Length: 299
Ligand SMILES: [Fe+2]
Ligand SMILES: [Fe+2]
Image (cartoon, rainbow, N blue to C red; front, side, top):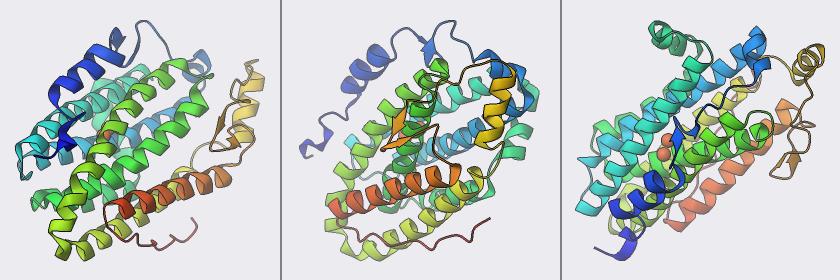
């Protein structure tokens, strides 16, 4: 096996993750950390947080199904072992975001119905396209779909959310930062492992390019709906003002935009552009030609 394994073996994972940045965390955050009071007190803000968290759970459940499914499709032992560590990471992500729903007041008996109510249908479709490849034991398409497309998207979404919550919700921000560190490892594996496989199997390129185009479409459609759901930034500001809570997001910047001054439409555009640009670069490195997705009709 080539040295792609360096940095992707179980020993490295143990030292850097459970014994490293997750040391002394409780469901991904400092013990005793709480959601902000205003979020728990205001139904509109709480529902917005629940809706967002459901999308994260839907994405992470897909990653758990994909990474575990790909273990038996992997052509080599080193990839199987990496995917075993990734499977545990993804299971943890599902668990910590599920715990956040409970912290936001969702009762355990209502978990599945809450997820069914709020999960974005475009995100569900995005997951189905990937999991179909995994079910077919198509390792090349599965890894590109998961470790380049799904996780490239997740990585940037988490970074954006981290910027938005660093001041306003340190508990959520810490959960996200541990998740971001995990996703960075997963994305790295995709690139390192799959480039050689694409070179060995050039006949797979067209299929993988079609997959990227389709998944990108549903990703954009998910964002389109997500950024238009829930209260507007003005409404949020009013809720905060009425409660006498100072907005703490004002100085936080992400991708050169100030989180508090940016409209949802602008933020959506910056997020989509950031992710698609990154797809192009990462896919280019593994020898795949990026396909521009269709733009979903505005909701
Ligand atoms: Fe994840
Ligand atoms: Fe991941």
